[in-house]
Image (cartoon, rainbow, N blue to C red; front, top):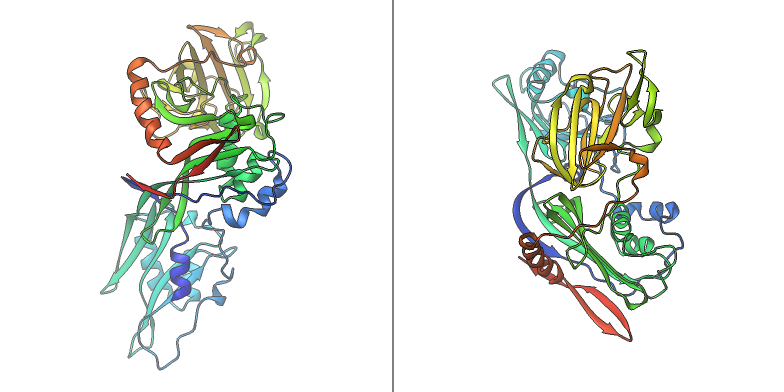
Length: 455
């Protein structure tokens, strides 16, 4: 039972409450730092502390037979057992292996399929079942089962009078803000993960500060840092999911640099303490660079379908169907629809600039006209809709309504929040800074995350 409960609690949820509880771990001395801003060795050494377990990432036996205990012939009382999906297993085969007869298992499967695609079960997934034994026939009876299907939901199946009813239950989480602080020895990134920050959020902090700090030359041993980020906790207080980076600060040479993640008029992005956008560049590519190739560049080309030379106002990236497409910069969606030869199409406005993404297989849920998106946010999948010879992404960039070569624009001019937005930003900034204390000490700032603040 203890093992069942342990597995039951391992998965993650999504938030459903605006209440925030701030619990922060402060460390002003960072021990045994390693070299290298993005050292993979350092990241690997922290995985046991920074990675959340997933449906296929928990330390339980891989074979169902290691978990299922055979009921004795004279024991008719209900008991709970934990099944674990192994290679080649199906929910039906697991139930039969547990002793449930085939017809009973099929009835349970028919009920499950009404609310859940059983093909989504992954190796390592834990499934808790309740069994009993008919006192007369000694047949094993399946009373119910449950498992965490995604971080957001739990599937439960109950049997009454031989009939099964399956339900999909939403799990509630509490959103909190936590953080780490300390002094580096050689690397901001390694110092942050050594203090307990997840590696992806430590990288996000480096990226967010990179427009303010030269990480190749500025960091020196003893420089202070602090970062804050969202965490989501279950009812026991256990962190089951990490959210966005909220704040990052670094003080190379005693010069305090700070960035705040703020929902501005162009979507969520990072601003410095003066309300100026700290992110001033487009992503090199709106696709994972390991999964793309350039099919057609910007400029004149022979059209692959129309067989004549024409101007190509963008870049075509060849990539497999379903490859994730992300927003190249923070902005507001201005179009998300099927649009002629472009097929499924999304355009995003970033001040004077607009990016466009065409021939998508699908547009991500929630991406519609007026939606604010952040840089790197998932907006769709590569496809071949519209006029296309195969799966690829057409990526275009416009400046004040006219197409320009995406490769020619390395940075965007920094914009500052308008007066009304700046007033809101100042209030937001004070809330964040209430969680951070800074004081000059021997010409340097010492940043310390406050002990506990509830708001």
